[in-house]
Length: 113
Length: 112
Image (cartoon, rainbow over all chains, first blue to last red; front, side):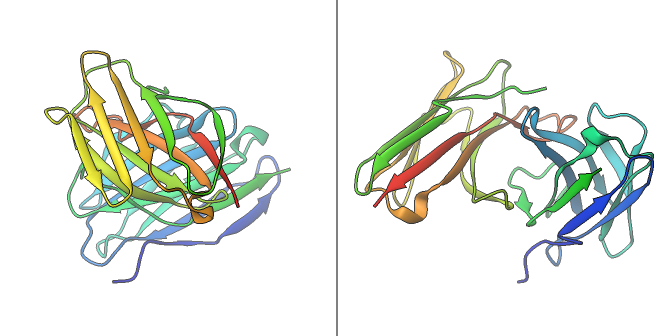
């Protein structure tokens, strides 16, 4: 099976802009989770989607949002970008909601100038 | 918030030696997992140990879990240059509300 894919792999934006990141889970996986990784805060949970519904959300402002489509693909949106949003955004999929083992994609590296 | 804390933050050893990394966490867990990350890429799942298990093996990996001390260790035996990576422990409290909670990782360098 193909692994988790994320697009784009690299992105440069300026403050105030918005960005949309995409994640395609492993075929058959219905849960998609998003994580933010920064040198200062490490890996932090953003949210989890299952059956097109957000099931869980981490401690991030409302500027961070997402959605999941009927084919389980997910998008994450960040509005009004701030310099501190520069990070590696990782998507992970699992077969079920709250699945124990998460299968991670390669990530999207976002740089906000 | 970070639950796991890995120790040491960085470790450099010679190829062929064993590498041991430790992880401490704060709250009760359902399971603890170890992941590897190469050069800022995605994470690769290595091994999962449940709260009712004390030790688990997978190839050259050995994981122990001490729930009374809220700590875990990852041992990589007979290290290889390809083991150079960052290693993260991640805890799952079983509630799913916070996803996996990761530590800040141990950066392992294997010297040829």
